[in-house]
Length: 295
Image (tube, rainbow, N blue to C red; front, side):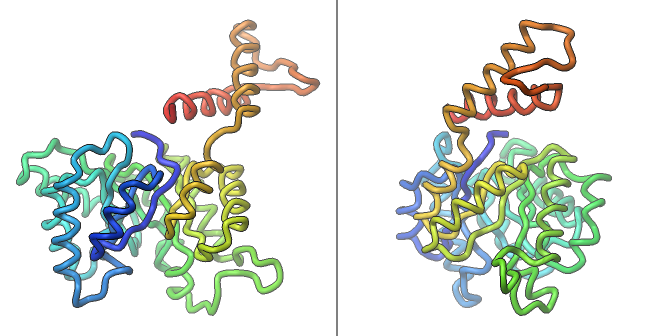
């Protein structure tokens, strides 16, 4: 699957905001039927999202995903039945407890794709993997048996705080995430890498603080995340820039690949006074692959 740097949430009950977001630089729009839509506007939102998907079949520049309501609510199946005819690129699944919900969603999608004549497996899944207390204890379920529709994992700090009974998810002195939320972040990243899906960073809720957003993006990228969710259009440019390799990074990656290719069979080699080995070569190739895809 194409790597996505920026995922922008858009309320599903606002035709104006969806149309405006279509011109945004986000790699993917997350058309929301959950938290941003009031209960009495669910039907309106489903209709608007379905019409928007149908009116925008070209996803070559920007993918269109839909966040449905949690599977353990009566809203989830009507959400799916309404939007799958528009062939969304994927479904964002919130309030997940384990991989079992991902597999259950995959079964629903299989039936709906058959109903609509869509290619089986064409609708992908992004799991919001840490919005419940139980989810912190079930990451191993993703390692055992999970649908190949799953292409990404992200984590949720706000809903997790509510689930844990926390008054805040940030440390009062440092401003960094507190311990339970750092655990959620780490487990999400490690699991995503273990099963070879995209690790997507959590939302940065202070949408006016673009400097803080950039710092968190760069920290995420250093850790191994390859993208981030945005809650405001102004955040997208910062996210895209932060998750795009710089010219210096690209040049160094090419030098690393070049020196290993010129010395086949060598496991370690020196460059600029530093010893490089196979992990460095792998990282360099990842950088080059990302750049080629973005271009």
